[in-house]
Length: 112
Length: 137
Image (tube, rainbow over all chains, first blue to last red; front, side, top):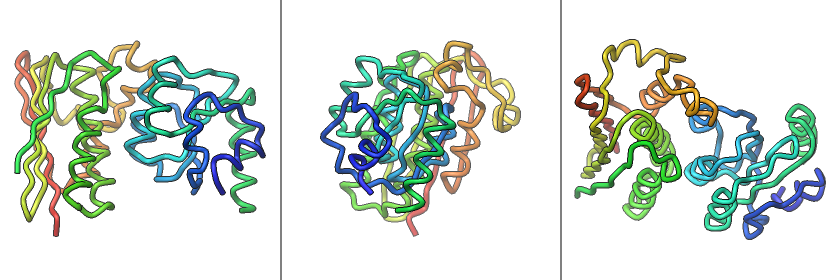
């Protein structure tokens, strides 16, 4: 499954980094603690968080995550958008709270 | 081969830049991707520690056929009790830093898990040097 498929199925907004919509999604990770993501997320994961600052892109890039989904309607800060464009890693947004979007993502990834 | 990258204390907008440079370097040197994945976690945590706590630092990378040795030396407040700092969950990060999702007390434990040898030397009011060794074989 690709990032663009998740965008379509979960009706996400693409905030930035559209060049990365073809990235392959291999799973998901949910956390707002950056060290937790750094230590435990895997390459190709979609990361669900409410953090919107630029450092999320440093982590997404270093861990080679597929995309970041901001929950509850949060929008990325300007320098986060810029970094997302530079890295080609999409920042996506949903109005849903973390629990609901995580459940929906889990369902579509489980069913392949 | 030896490389140095500067780290600016207090500037979170550049946190991860040095780690990203070292990651690129290790890829160019054809280091095993699984090893790079581990090292990157340790590098980033150590870099963020300098940004969050110190005034300035240098990430020094020495690479030979047997090991990658990364030494991160900072000028800063130092660590009064290293054993306490190593405990998962212990943090002296400011509330502002915690709000960003840092300062959960997972940094040093993450470093320890993601390198083969870890040495921390620190002098209060002078600075801290973290040495991380990853064996290549």
